[in-house]
Length: 268
Image (cartoon, rainbow, N blue to C red):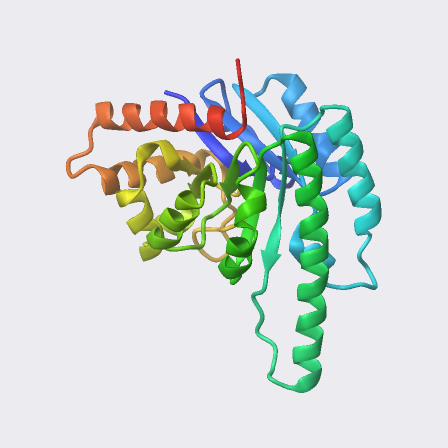
C-alpha cells in the first residue's frame, strides 16, 4: 500500500528514517534552504516519490520590518520558470490572533491582513500564469477564500492543507467549480468534529491526508513524524467504514493515491 502525505515539511523533520518506497509526499518549502534540502531528498530516492511545493506563508509577512517577501517572490518565480516545483504553496490567509481589542491592535491586525491579501494575490497570479496547482493555508479566513472563487476555479487544482472548514464549506467550494481537494491530518486523531464530518461525507475522490510533520503535534512535546500518516489513514478508514479491515484500508490508500496524482497533476 502507498501512503500519500499531501503536506509535510521534510527540512524541519529531525528524522527521516521512517520513509520508504510506500511513502509519497509533497514537501512544502518556505525558504531557499527548505527547497535545497527537499530537492536533495527527492534526488536521493529515499521515498517512493517526493513532489516539491514552494510558497510564502501568510505568517511570514506579518511583520513589515522582517519580511523579505520580494526576494522570496523572485525566487518562487524562478522556480516556476525552471519547472522545479509541482505546486505553489503553502500560501493563503492566517487571521488567528489573541491580541487585545484596542484601537492600536485593530489597526495592526488590519495592516497584517492587507499585507497577506497583497502577497496572496501575487502568488495566485503566478500559479494562474503557470497553470500550477496551489496549496492553501487558511486559518480563520474561509470568507476570504470564497471571495476568490472565480480565480481559484481557473487553476488545475486547489489543495486545502489541513482543511479548516465544515462539510458545508467544502460542498460550496466544489459547487463554485473549484477543483478542490481537502486534506486532513492529525486533528482527526484528536477528534476534530468538522474534519470527521468531512471525511465521512465527502466523495472519496476529494479526500487527501497529511502529517504536516513536524508540526500539528499529537501532544505537548511530541514531534509529528512522517510515519504518523499511517495513523491518520487508519483512523480515517474507521470513520468511513463501520467495520474497517485490511481490504478497506487498501482501497482508501488506492483512492488517495489517485487523488494525490490528480491534485498535483502527476502523469507518471
